[in-house]
Every structure is written in structure tokens, then in C-alpha cells.
Image (cartoon, rainbow, N blue to C red; front, side, top):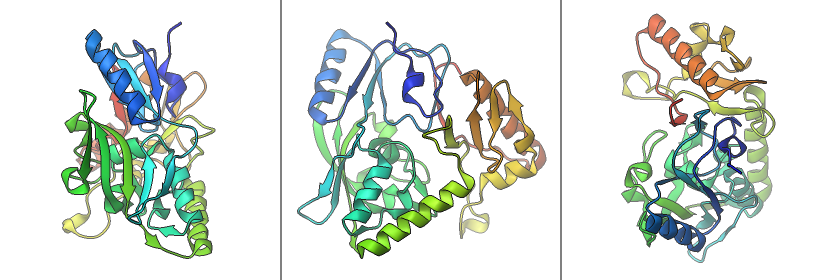
Length: 294
């Protein structure tokens, strides 16, 4: 029986892959990687599937899914917060608040895993995971484990060198600051409340959150300019394609409604970008990655 990737993305869209293996630790990942390499099978890596649109026809590669239902994290001997790449990012943020470790509150409510979040340098409210990372344990495509410092990962806005390096993140250590637990938990609740105001619940409604990256600040300083502002002015909230539509409270969020296909989402996103290009004269860059001929 084929495994459809729609079961493993927050859009809940996407066709089958050649073979899927889910692992939570480096040893299990290495075993799978070596077996696929020995068999000459092409493969790619999936985390929480939260920033991904998979083609309706699927992809020809095998997929190694690094994910776990519950977090594997602890306070390390050097004072950093250690977490497995398979850990849900929001659960790690909750653990940090509960144990008095400040610095990760901004990541509350962000979907996906630690590994996927680091690959795309996930962030919110002007902060990113790369800002607080200390080091990572990676697995090479040959199945060898290595430790890399933050400086080797070339973090940028919603980007890192990890995808280009072709390695798998297996564990991460974050620099945290000692803080009051009650204050940190209040900060977390405030962040979650802010997200609820403008964002759909990705656990309930099929979406990948913000579809396009925010734009650089004008003049090279200050905060990035919200892509949603330009999309709203270009009329994106009234757009839809098949079963895909734009979220009523946020013009940069695409929803996959009943009967939606990946093609619907891609078509809608292209129309949104075209409207901004026509009105403002620049191109939006997708934050969501595409797998296969979408």
C-alpha cells in the first residue's frame, strides 16, 4: 500500500513517495540512510511538513521523516537547552518556559520540528532560531555523525546553509538565559494569544502558515516589511483557486479547503504573487517549499 505524503504535511496535500521511514534519533536515521544508499535509492528529508507543498502526483524519491510526537529535550551540562531534531518546536518552547530557560519564547506556536525549523531558520516577532542556536549534531548523507558550530550554518532570514549542505540535523543545543518560570510562561501565553488573533490553528485547519517571505526593510534598517500588507492591498483576500483560498484574517496565509489540491494552492499562490507584481513592481519569494511538479 502506497504512503501518501498528505498524511505528513500541515497542508494535508500531496501524493505518494517511493518509500517512507520515520525515525527520531541519529542511529535509526543512519541505518535507513545506509540501506537506501546501498540500494542506490534517491531520498530526501522531511520534518514536521509545516512549510511544504507536495505535488498531487507525489515524488519518485524515498522520504526519511525525522519527527516525534513528544519532545526529547533537557538542560545540558553546559547550561544550553538540548533537543532532538525530531522534537516539535512548540513543545520545546513549552519545556523552556516550564524549566526557567528564557530565549525561546518567540518560537511558541510555530509548527514543525526543531530540525526543519533550523533548516529554514524559523522565527517570529523579529527573532529566529539561528539567533539562539549554539551548535548542532548532523548526519551526513553517507551516514556519518558530526558536530557543527552555529558559525558554520550561515543563517539568514528564513534560510540556512543546511539544505545546501545536504545534511540531516539530528540534535541541537540552544543558548538560553535563566528566567522566572511564571514570567516565561506568561510570555509564552501572550505569544500564543497573538498568533491566535491572526493565524489559523494548523492542527485543525490545513495550511502552511505564511506563504511568502516578508520583504527587507526600506533603507536597509528597521523591521522587515510584511508581505501580507502588500498582498491585502493587491486584493489577495478575495482570491481563490478551486478548493484553495486566502485566510480571512491574514492575506499571506493560504488555506486548503475541502476538495483542494496542491495544484489549487500553487495556482492561487501564483495569482497572489502576480497581483503584487502588477501593483507594486516586485516579486514575492515563497517561504513554502515545493516538492515535485506542483
